[in-house]
Image (tube, rainbow, N blue to C red; front, side, top):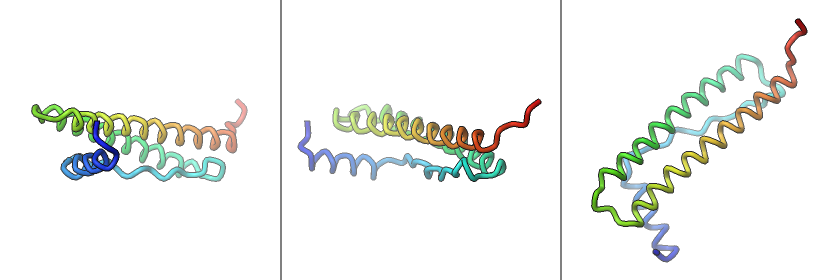
Amino acid sequence: MLPGAALVAAFVLVSAASACDTPAVVAMPDGKTSTKEQMLAARDQVKAYMKGMEDFMKCVDDEAAAKSDATAEYKDQMAARHNNAVSEMEAVAAAFNDQLHAYNAAHPAPPK
C-alpha cells in the first residue's frame, strides 16, 4: 500500500495520463418552480450525461485492460475511477428523481 501522499500522486498521475474525460454534471432545476419544458430539458441533459458517463466508464475499463503490466495501485485507481463514476451517476439520477417528484407534487395532473 502506498503512503497517503504517494497514493494521491499516483491518482493524479493516472488521471493525467488517462484519455478518459467525464461529462459535465447536470444542473438540476427546482422541480417546485420549473416549467414542463425545463423539466423535459433537464431529463434530456440527464440522459446525455448518463450516456457520457457510460462512455467514460468503458474508456476507463478499456484503458485498464490494455495495460497488461499495470501495478496493483494502477488497477486500484482505475477501479476507483469506475466506481466513483457509478456513484456519481446514481447521485445525479436520484437528484433528478427528487426534482421530478417535486415537480409532480407542484403540478398535479388534472382529474380524469
